[in-house]
Image 1 (cartoon, rainbow over the protein chains, first blue to last red):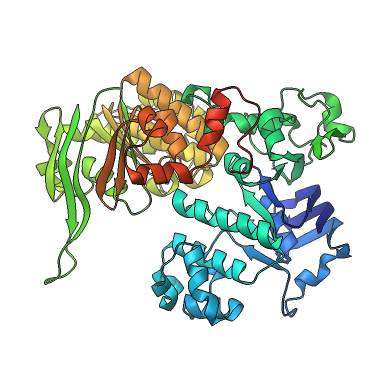
Image 2: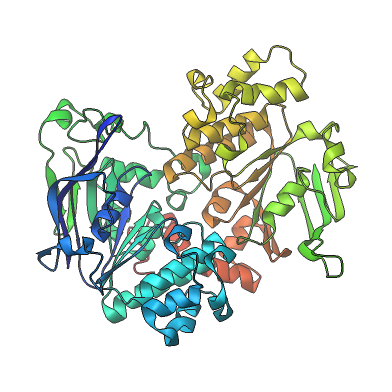
Length: 303
Length: 270
């Protein structure tokens, strides 16, 4: 349904040109929940903005296309299209709500007055809150309203950027259950952007791992748990509490994300990688197909 | 070392209205070298309890016995001059906001040494502390805004360790950090606790962090304790309905049991 092909995006700024996305490819089928995982600064959010058609005007698309049902998805930038098939939940919930209208009115705008109560209930908010203005709600409550707004439009594709970060576990579970139900019942596709690998594994069918603007591995969620092949995915696993038995077993990923404004090696993980060799810096990066939908962008994948 | 008994906090809401009870009858104990986790959802009163124990906030009722002295009756203003103030240190959630913006990392760590330990030349001790929290010494000259989130968290911990405390009150110390950075900080805290025999009151809402860091826990809901006991027992078989609900809502725990049994299959589609 949605295909991102070799998308490269750069930002030009005072410090030089930052190549924030480097030949990123991604596919989402109807009814599928795809997790996009990586550290802060890996380009997850820029990719989700590009897909939602709300890229910063300063961003330059250097190459690649986003296709929606086989057509270039340029129309997603046309803000006048009355009913876009795509809805998004942003990281900063308060700024995505209209401060001058009650949340009940905003929900009624997109879904009709009859559905306001059920939408509020579905995100664990009391119906009485419909008369509240965004400023009267906590950050977590605003987040839930923006999720209700997105889902109330009955989109074909939901792009959710860290939708449950900062919410307590009970609300998080309720919202992710709701997204899973909509995926099953109505075939809504979801791109779930998160830094939480364990959450992605539990909730997504497929996971795409990004590092410094590159996709490093994409596979079924279970394959990421049992057989991650990219050294970065493996390193990311060791720092997730869920995958380690004691605190002493935790380990942080060595090094830092490279500065994207400098000349970068072909594999941007090379400087942090134990398996790195000279070819990693200059020779074209091979894409190793482990399985029909398990791809690893690495010269020396783990076995 | 620390014994909290019937701790409560009420806020006055108006002249004629009933006070709002934020924390009601909370009791627990922490031994040297032990980590007690204080958990619950947002608004459950965890932070209020933590702040009362480090005497940043006045308590309304109850006793806080620290080495047999009731510090709960000392007002936060008077506590500044109390010898126990050096021994209880608070680590804040967002290290970026908790550090003074015009002090370099060096001065942020040296400040409690000068004030509480009355050291004239704290340089050697600052370097020792930076080393203990794995903060490269060349970063000490930087201001908070020039440090990454993880580095700021390390400065916050070094600063808390500076006066050689016995108890650290950690209020969601890793909540604003990336997972890979969180891993390093959790590991560091766990090592420090064992090496220095520190008592921890660890406030968090993350059950996975609770499992890794603590041996006992207190679960709060709407200002009240709903469950207290061993962490392992809670994670295997919570006694309260609320505890069961929380555990069920965190499906990621099923992955751990899978991993522990060395299964390669995850709990698919949870």
